[in-house]
Length: 56
Image (cartoon, rainbow, N blue to C red):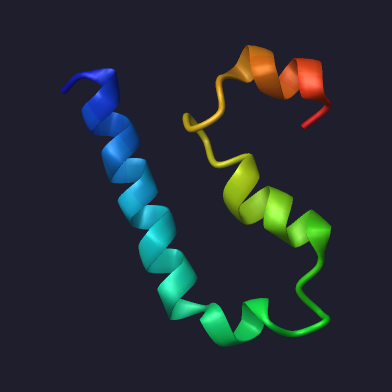
């Protein structure tokens, strides 16, 4: 499996997660820190060097 296929699988999983929890994401309890943890820092979707440089 190449890196592009791995990213497609990862994005599909994140999309599925979003659809399952859409109601929760629209509440005030779901803040920026949760967003970062669940989506932005998703393993493999942002290269480690970028996460490190951006402070993620």
